[in-house]
Amino acid sequence: EAQVTQNPRYLITVTGKKLTVTCSQNMNHEYMSWYRQDPGLGLRQIYYSMNVEVTDKGDVPEGYKVSRKEKRNFPLILESPSPNQTSLYFCASSSGQGYNSPLHFGNGTRLTVT
Amino acid sequence: GQNIDQPTEMTATEGAIVQINCTYQTSGFNGLFWYQQHAGEAPTFLSYNVLDGLEEKGRFSSFLSRSKGYSYLLLKELQMKDSASYLCAVSSGNTGKLIFGQGTTLQVKP
Image 1 (cartoon, rainbow over the protein chains, first blue to last red):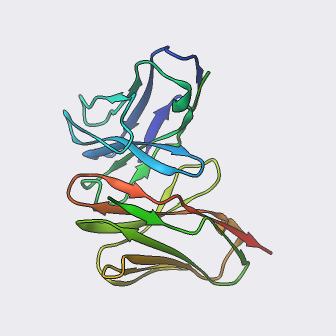
Image 2 (image 1 turned 90 degrees about the horizontal axis):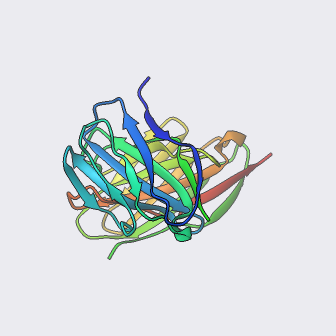
């Protein structure tokens, strides 16, 4: 089954404790992206990658890192999480370049930073 | 900069027709997407418009006017399961950036 898999689905952590949210897709998509969703603010793009070893900042990249060492994986890294990063996170992939074909979303990761 | 506006909430009756509007301001427009998102779930793709006009797909249609920076999503024969948020998203330039509106929460009542 074609899908984008995020883990974990739920995560509660404390300020400053490094964490990684994994994202993997099995559709051989070149484009992958991370979003956060907050009430009243909608989906905001954190980082995106148009191919292996190519990553670019979205609109809210501060406090996040990503890597794209293989086509299928695009982990999101929070080196020192803070409470303002409490949010619902979505990973997505696309067969195009992100601007011309539909996104396939993972099921989301709900992160709470205390 | 880029800006996308959608109504926050709408209510409609089962079996009726509802139109959800989206206006945008952007440079280098590439296309406009509509996604549906049920509460607690991931967004799912509904439609993509790159040229002016109406795209019809079953009960759902999407319209685009690039000169007016305007799109709408038309839902016909509303069903209770159509209660969800509808997200308008615009891509501009060949950068891979996609900007989402805040979404319109549609409530379908019996």
